[in-house]
Image 1 (cartoon, rainbow, N blue to C red):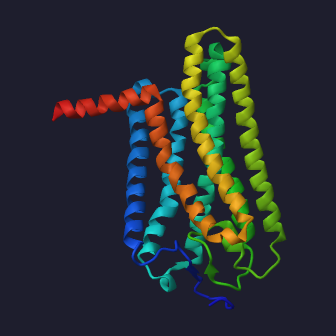
Image 2 (image 1 turned 60 degrees about the vertical axis):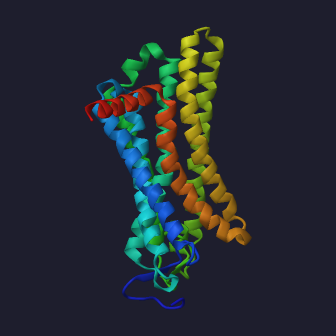
Image 3 (image 1 turned 135 degrees about the horizontal axis):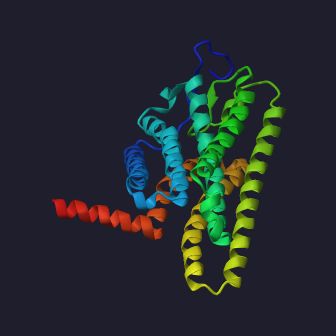
Length: 312
């Protein structure tokens, strides 16, 4: 299969390497993670949409995060579950299905950064310009920020995969647990210099803008908090910013781990496992972190459970 182009656009996906003995435990683990991710993230979106007291810019912007986690988990885990229970020589996937999975996987990874960037901007305005918060963070501004976070990711990833789709293919094996851009352009025997350059620019711009904007935001917030003697302001800033920062560090750490391991071919198997965990772990950790650390959300969750307990 390696040296032929197939007219039916069928590829062989490596999938996650698991032994026959560990296939069912692995399947059960990822199934539990997927169910937990979907229930918690959908639950947070429903909770925020139903509770009028949470109809604030901070929580409306936050809804983008669980929505993105749902996209990321759905793009990867169901296919992963299928492949775990399928024999390695039979893990076929069509080229178009592979492109679609790669698109949503990259959109998820990119939007994880852009959404956290707009959430950082909201915290900056709330803490550094509290008197102008209501006039700046209007419904129109919230919509613009949300659309920009998703729009930038979709456009950048669209160009990334557009450059790959134009290439002819001479191979049919995807040596990765899931489809991504690098796996797709490696199917071609053409010159992929442009793909490598754009991919590098894309990654550098995303990480530099993400790290730069959030670092600058927290620096300004820290200066305001240190110069202020308002203990209530400092306490609120510490609570909301620590939650946001923790989520960002998890996303950043997972991204850097995958990028670094790409540079060491000897750790190929470790990189593949890390790439899966790096995409799956944040989707189930984010709702836990925000649900437990954010006072308002935690209070509403306890109130909902209390109502359900009383009604029964």
